[in-house]
Amino acid sequence: MDDQASPAGVDPNVPNVARMYDYYLDGKDNFASDRAAAEQILKLFPDTRDSARENRAFLARAVRHLVESGVRQIVDLGSGLPTRGNTHEIAHEIAPGTSVVYVDYDPVVCAHSRAILGKGDNVTVVQADVRDPETLLAGLREHVDFDQPVAFLLLAILHFVPDENPDGAGAYQIIERLREVSAPGSYLVLSHAIDASPDSTPEALEIYKRATEALSLRTHDEIARFFDGYELAEPGLAFPKDWRAVEPPLFTDRNTSIGYVGVGRKL
Ligand SMILES: C[S@@+](CC[C@H](N)C(=O)[O-])C[C@H]1O[C@@H](n2cnc3c(N)ncnc32)[C@H](O)[C@@H]1O
Image: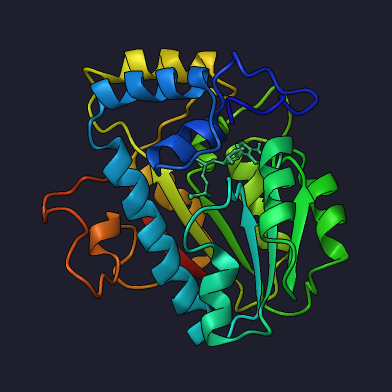
């Protein structure tokens, strides 16, 4: 994106979590500041790039599981910049009628998503901040029938939301509100970063603090609490390589992930 004029309201000198993640995935939608911050993270956590790919591979398996289980409404919260294997592409391979709503608060993500993803049937892009659940839900009501099961995907986003949030709802409050509005048989799909290497973590936290969002890393038990009121699908809250991998692990059988993933069905 270096050759393009920055979209209104975007400071290319401040690293941004969506564009750093795009860089981990070998995307082109990032600025020099994003690449520099991402390279600092890669020095501290060399597995970050593989972890991002494992996360995307999990997304594909989880979306297939949802659609094969009969879900026909998917809301991808914090969907990120379009990449290979986007949610609607995976869902529509199995059931083209599945409605997919992409939500992100980042104007660049939404503009790219509208340009690239928003052309097909049954695909919508909504710009909203999950820390303001009532405005988010008001924006979703036009596209989602909450009397029917819906799957909320929150992949690699909740660790940007603290428990107590001076700017809006905290992470647990958001998930509770989503559960309240969901019909029985709805799903919650999470991937969430953990404190994978305590020695390097303080430095990584500083890098993310200088980017658009600070990190709130959580433990296995703290992530599992998000699934209160849901039945976790086998194998439970796991490393991505252990979550119903049909192919051999992407890189090695060593865990490269810096987070846990899970899929829950509302009771
Ligand atoms: C690391 S990316 C993950 C992208 C995608 N979900 C995935 O796992 O491949 C995190 C995304 O969450 C978005 N995000 C962070 N905080 C958000 C918030 N409060 N509301 C909506 N989107 C948010 C960022 O803009 C970014 O696009």
